[in-house]
Image 1 (cartoon, rainbow, N blue to C red):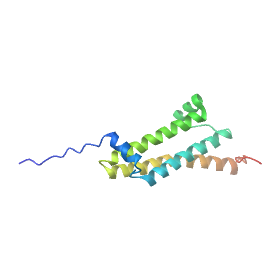
Image 2: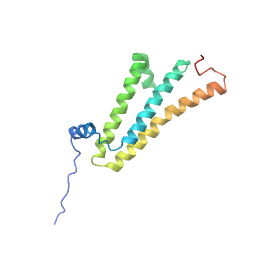
Image 3: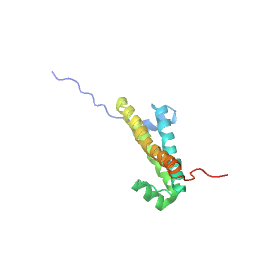
Image 4: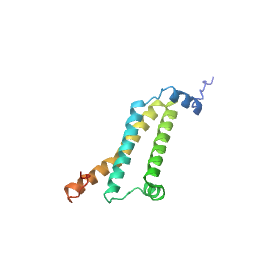
Length: 135
């Protein structure tokens, strides 16, 4: 009379850790791209700050004010690892959703580096600022 309902529960976190340890991340390329964009964000932020710019993200600005660049690097990579862990965990039961999360993470994380690159370009072209170190 009734249909059998399956209780699709996500695997325990220990399974996720075991799979990651074996090198079986589902979205290795996406995660690499996400990590690359996060690194680019930190590098460009440091560059903008070095020529007198300011951090416009209030959370990142507070972290920089409190712990400096080392703090923002740690904070950024902790967030990056959190997103990677969440997407891999979601992928255990809903791979299509996790794939979209990875894509969203890359796109959203790509906005600040594009903004920073635009600021650096504008500073140089429009205002003649020296944005590159001189020899």
